[in-house]
Amino acid sequence: MKALVTVTHPRQNSLTHAVMNRFIEGLKQNNHEVDLLDLYHDGFNPVYTAEDEKDWINPDKIYPPEVRKEMDRILAADTLVFVFPLWQYSVPSMLKGYLDKVWNLGLFGKVSNKKVLWICLAGGDQEHMSKYKREEMLTHYLNVAVSGYARMQESRVELLCNTLSESKEHIASLLERAYQLGREYE
Ligand SMILES: Cc1cc2nc3c(=O)[nH]c(=O)nc-3n(C[C@H](O)[C@H](O)[C@H](O)COP(=O)(O)O)c2cc1C
Image (cartoon, rainbow, N blue to C red):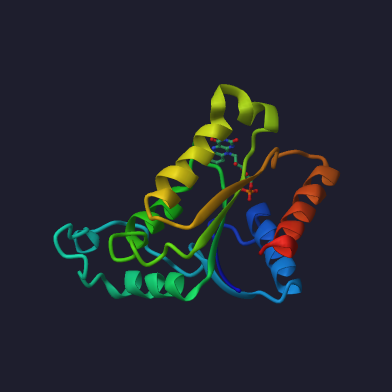
């Protein structure tokens, strides 16, 4: 299986990157192939321009080269995995820009065989995330609104909570969870 892993964080020594690395180690143990997209480090431009606008009448519209390149990477993958921190109970603006630009009409209808896994690092603990249905809101948004609208075959969210904890044991347990997720990924 080929996984396109997209990581979103401005710092490569972030916990988000450490989680991504452990997840990939697990995937590779399982002999899965990995294509890594680091949105910040690879210089993805998330600003949506007039050229990116969808053409509702023409599904064959030719999108800008940077967008087409990323669409091709999606089409070449069996599964898409996103690793990102929770910001304002949503995805960081960099990732939102990627989704706005790349998950567009040109892809719809061509990705119904793809699976998506959203690995989200949240500063809040599990109780905080459950309160006011924050976790429910996030999973509904990602699984139903985003993946569902693109007609992805399957979508699930894995929430890694309490990421700002000073407990080394807790952070180690999150990294171990990331490794196991990769190891068990089918
Ligand atoms: C701009 C910003 C917004 C954030 N918003 C939230 C939030 O809405 N809910 C939450 O639980 N944590 C929030 N956090 C905390 C991040 O989720 C936390 O810093 C991250 O999971 C830690 O991983 P990192 O060290 O890789 O950044 C926010 C952090 C930043 C910088």
